[in-house]
Length: 366
Image (tube, rainbow, N blue to C red):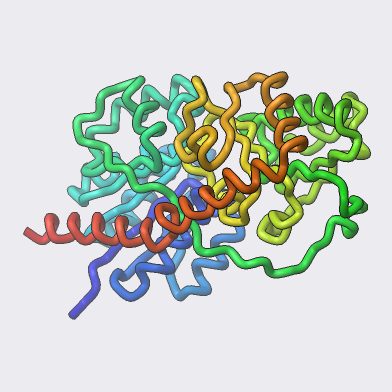
């Protein structure tokens, strides 16, 4: 019996949470679907997906990335493949593949990985104009669903499929001393791309206040990106450059065991894989959320929530973790790990996507 054909369309195969989720889904569905991945921006996940034996195709324009030639090439590639279902993720892939799928009458799933307001008004307008062309919209959290509904009421019910992680395993035993940090120092850790939306500047400003009260506090930032230089300069201006350690271009998995506290200072996250991994490794987690509401963390149960953008409050909460570390660990981190095991594994996520894709394949065959 032949497999159903599934094409994944993504804006990027660079390093990132959405790209990692796509790789996990593709790997899981190898036995049940004949898959292909179409992408617009190169990255390390191209090779990883090809190593699975899954074909990848890069689509680009002639004069610029999203010119008419781009859409013509994307349309013809999808037409030639003639998949039973199209699955797209990230803004450019969602909008462009909707137009093609609608014209070709191919069922499709669009996934929202982040709150839509971070896309900007022009992109939001295009998203809204083409949203009805999608057969099944998916969001990674109820918070993301609400962000969509704040701008338009979609014609179809948005299904929530939360991101999930494979049970992570440390690959290298890295000690604090390897970064020049004393064993008895308290480490604030953060993981993510060094881009404005991640708001690492808020974390550094809060860390400077914490260090004034607790001289043994250090910061580790794991990631990389366009804001690295600006963040290094900010650390210098705050006079904490000797306390901030940048770990660039490597897997974060090996560094979670060094964190005495994990901080996510961004306010516009869907379901962050870095946060899920930190919870699994039983790091006390501090996140941002309006009115102390967060899509993953329940304040005081499995983590702590700080009012979005509030530097003083973030510093105060981190200080409370430093001063009451044993209490925080005993009362929050166990619940956090249990939440991951029960609700946020890749198996749960993959099974939901497989069920959804199979449902649409059955619908298209009728």
